[in-house]
Length: 565
Image (cartoon, rainbow, N blue to C red; front, side, top):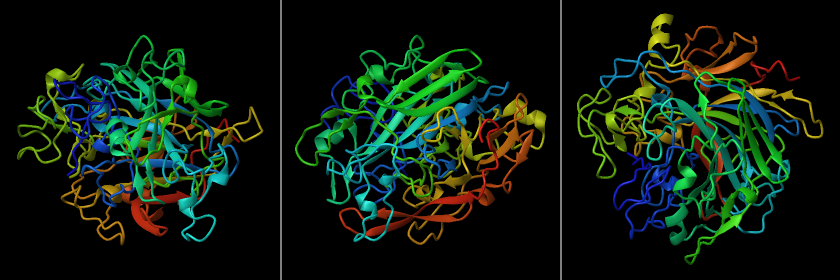
């Protein structure tokens, strides 16, 4: 079972918004008083990795890093589709019935997902697979596509430029405010721009030196909240070398805070100095933004496999590709995508009594989730008194046995009675298929031609992580959807919105009112067959194939935006 490590400020313990930094003086200690996003310690908001340098499902410290991410992918071969996209998003509402400790009340959004996000691949020349090796990354260019399996050919995947992945994340309200929890506010949503990079060189078989790993980890994160003035928090740089407590502490006077039900326009586009995110809240009239630029404090971690240096290199992060297709991907990530929407699920179980003094903050008593007693994944837990609004205790550990709240019939559309569903279950997130601006055609908005459903269950279903699953990622044997232990697994469907009659995507069950297409009506039917993805053997010029996902590609986009063409 993996150990979930999240922020918590206790005497003698230095932690981050994404992962614990351990006791001062140990191998993973950081600068005293600072905050660092150590994805290596199983942070909940980091990109899922295929393998670590030890070739195992765990990282260099033996902890699992990864997340259950049902995703929707968008494909187009038209230049511009990989670097300028715009979504319409409606933030989901919570039900009128509050959750209770017995698990018989309502279910709130923070129990289903600590975040959901829009993503795109980015250039980072200090990241896997070619950090600091003179391999250029020309922004917004399909010249960066290298996905061949023959090491003797020019398109060999090991020749790919260094790559990062951007996740534009939204965080639900109502529970423990972070740091140390997973909400920004008791009643309002917030959002942040995250860029995840991997400091490994598979061609040389090396990784970032241990001293720098202690500060930033192997998978490092640039992080900045979306702010009202487009600038990071004063004194809180986004880059992983210099980031601190101010970087990761929400500030309602600076950050864009949003209400459940608000209608947003989310625009992601490249600029001369990096990717810019602009969020227009059409309901409140407020606008927030953030640009991933060196001027805003974003930066690479200089790749140094030996020594003790840990240096920030100021950097403008640009989208990597011109288009978005099966060939535009992050070569170190478990998922296969470029432009995508993903929900982060599998991070909440009830806990009636938690140890919030001794890490990993385990659950001490039976709960609605585990009535026979706490099990190995009931860690990083809080008590009801820690919450900002909803007074329940719970655990945020990676749910390896798939028995937590997100795997029950508590999603929107999972009740046969619409009134019961509306009283007890949250409304679904609603988002449009993005439109994009074709290169050289300002003012025009085009639709993506195709979509794909993809879920990374095989990556999680290995026995070392999940005791009731035994997926062989080399052969595909034992890889199942839904996973063993889950009573329900959510899937995407479409609907027409009441206000504009335009098509929107939603996530949950088959019975959400207004649903127009359920794509088979189960996760098994929707996410399709196993997908074999190409990677590189660490330290060798040799291909490695892994079943990390189930994926189904639709030949046409069934939810085109009426504003596009």
